[in-house]
Image (cartoon, rainbow, N blue to C red; front, side, top):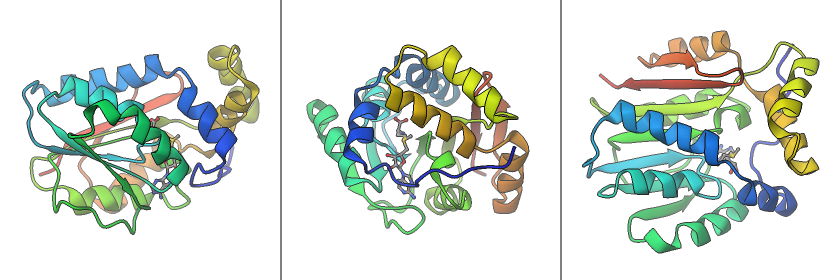
Length: 218
Ligand SMILES: C[S@@+](CC[C@H](N)C(=O)[O-])C[C@H]1O[C@@H](n2cnc3c(N)ncnc32)[C@H](O)[C@@H]1O
């Protein structure tokens, strides 16, 4: 099945509210657990960067997992950042929210020691926007962790995943999940993106719908 893109930024207030209030406890905590295992440095006290931070749930989990860290978190949607502002308010001294769009955003730091991104890649018309931004703000030793959806083989397979994992969710979230699956990349496409940008990252399929990409920049 060919990729069918969805709108890049999430700006529709109804969609943003539904996403911000949805329960992502399991996939988001799994992402942070994997990241923690990979970084293996609970006392990490450097600067991290979250690309496509959305309403900030991952930011809060990251800040809890690495209590000595600081985090710059970027999103192109003002509506998402409004939620992020509320969710991250209790730890606002360690999280800086930045309104900006990849690949054009200019970030306040030259380099970051950890760069993370969850569920951004499938939104991008040009996926190289993510990989080029990572390259630009990484230095030797930067740990990179990216998680995203994988595109199933057919619309029927996508619909079946929605039934399996989102049957109890609101219709708007089910619809978003379906369109995100159609917009996601395959393992082979992600491999080609990493080859093109010469990023030494490893790709692992971690479930029937998720890919985890990680590595240390040399
Ligand atoms: C599915 S949400 C994921 C949010 C968050 N990372 C999470 O896991 O909950 C994707 C986010 O990426 C943002 N986004 C899409 N394209 C972007 C771009 N080029 N630059 C910055 N943000 C972008 C959207 O506005 C949206 O908030």
